[in-house]
Structures are given as C-alpha cells and as structure tokens.
Image (cartoon, rainbow, N blue to C red):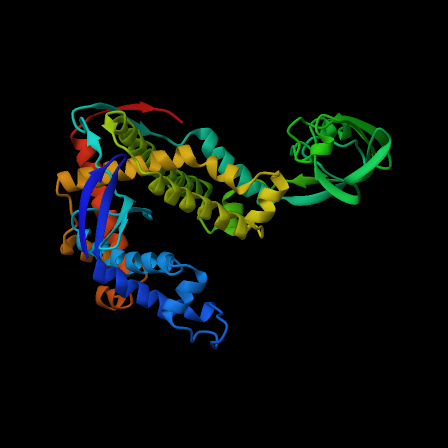
Length: 434
C-alpha cells in the first residue's frame, strides 16, 4: 500500500491510496472468507462453496465491494494516525474509487481538517470593555424577593380582588360556544398580575367579589402553542371562590437575623450587594471576552468544514436536551409539541455554531502564535486553591482528581492568560451600562 496527501479545497485533504495486484487478490480472498456464509450454491452446504464457484453463480464482482471496504478500513486508520502530526482531522472521509485495474486499485478519500485561521490583526485595536454596577433597584429587587418568600398569606373577605392577590377560581372556556381541551378547571389558584394567563384575562378578574360569576372575553395570541386556538376569540365563564393576599413582613434587624442569619439590615444589604456585584463582574467579563473575539473575528478569514459546524451543533443540541431533562421533558416530545422537525431544529443552531467554531479557531491560533501555556506551578496553585475551599490538603485533593479535571484547570489557566494578553495589547474602552 502506498499513499499520498494533498491539501484540497475548503479545508480538506485529498488522500490517494494505491494497492497493487497482490494486495487486491489478498483482499478478495479475505472478503470471500468473511462473507461466504451469505451465499447459497446448489450442491454445497451454505458457506462451503469455493470462491470461484460463488463468483460463477453470482458474478465475478460479487466480492469486490467487500474487498474494497476491507482495503480501506484496514489502512485508513493507520494513515490518519501517521499524518496526525501534520493535520488535525475533524470529520469522516468522503470516499470514492479512483482507478480499478487488475494490478492497480486506487481509492481517494477527501477528509475535512482543522483549518488555519488567517487573522490580519489581534492587537492594537480599540475594543469595548464592559462594566456593570449594582443599582439601588437591583438591591431593592433582592429585598423584595426576600420579603415575598417570607410573606404571610391572609384571607380577604371584605373587598374585591386586586392586582397581586391570589384568587381561587373555577372557569370554563369556549370558542364559538364549544369547550376546548385545557380550558376548564375548578379551584384554580391564580396570582393576578403574574401574566400567566391569556392577555386580558387577569385584568378582567380584578374587581370581582367572592361568589361573583362573570364572562371574561379574550383573544388567543397569534403565536399560541395550540394551532387550533391561534387568534381565536374565546369566552371564559369564571366564578371567584376566594381571595388571598400576601402580608409582607417588616424589614427590621430582627427579621433579617431570623431570615438570613445576618446581624442587621445594613449587613444584609452589604453582603447582597457584594454577591450581586460578583455576578455582574462575571457577566461583564464574559461580555468583554465576546467583544474581543467579535473584533478579531471581523479581521479573520477561515474556511470552516461543515463537519466542525455539525459537531458544534451536536454540542449545542445536547446542552439544550440536558436542560429539558431537568424539566422532565424529552427532546423528541418537545419537537413534536412545536411541530418542528429535528433537521429544522438543528438548522436554527447553524449560525451560533459557526460563530462558536470560528471563535475556537481564533483562540487556538493566538495561543499557538503567542506560545501561551500553563506552568505546573500555576496548575498546582489552582489545585491548592480548590483544596483549601473544601478544607483538604493539596496532596490529598490532587490524588483523588480525575486527569480530565487537571486538564480543565490547565485549559482554564491558558484561556485566562490569553484574554489577559489581549486586554493588555488592545485599547480597551469602558461604557458602563446595564
């Protein structure tokens, strides 16, 4: 077996594999030995007929396809392994027969490879850096959530329903006088103002009194999930059974100590502000890194093989599938509910996948060009930091780590150093926003 490699179009490599006559004869014999049990020939037990007899009955080329597959499969992996220092193969080959002669069999494999990102510049640019600050409204929202979680529910008997109340209702919905699936319930608790019902429904319940019945007229949105109800006018016969309101506790030092363990309202506010700011700092850092990559991507040319995009789509779809699993849903059921094919669903991720792959190639290129790496001292320091957080010695903690965890730490250090380098070597300007 002999082979040659040659760079081809669209980030692919053309591998031409040649076999001589003896290799072809050996492959035919091997194909015969592995597949003869499939063929029935009169006068012979199944699997016992000689090769030439099977060829006479089924045709001379009966073993050709299997022999070609054997030649390719037995040699392709060895070639890929040998060429892996020169190329990074990223997908399955597109295989075709080039020459088919008695003393020469030639097979061509077009294989997608990791492309080279041609970056015109990644330093000396003016790039936006993001910074976010906790606002009074942010802090108040956290306080409101704390008070709401600790609210006491009180029964209301002396007034009509108001926004914010929890009303217990019976309802029956109809379209053109006909009931529809999911449009009927008894003893349903609804928080008025939550927006959980069809637009206009909750607003019409506001003002109702206990024991009162009323027809609520609404129109289903055009984007409603049930196709048969989209844009349809509906009438809900509603009866209000009861009203419950939330009574919020007073924000005092005593309440804060009982609810959170903090010593005072001021201590809680400071601790909460620090937590919110840490979250905003992470968000700002992510936005800044995306801003840097987008600026570099605008100066980058790269031919991305479809195989790399498909692989990234696989990853994005898998992440979404995991999110559904946490909600007790399956992707197939989700797509069926939306009446969307898997192919169309995957197509929605194509743009994001392409952007992600381009960013990955940019990152890989700069890391290699700038020789950015993580030293063993840096890795050990990070491991020691993690060990301290769980009150273990670095040696004990490291001994129980999976090698992939150490690889992740090393990669995280490299990425951090990469963006530190890019921030230091570009003109970063800040527009404080929210």
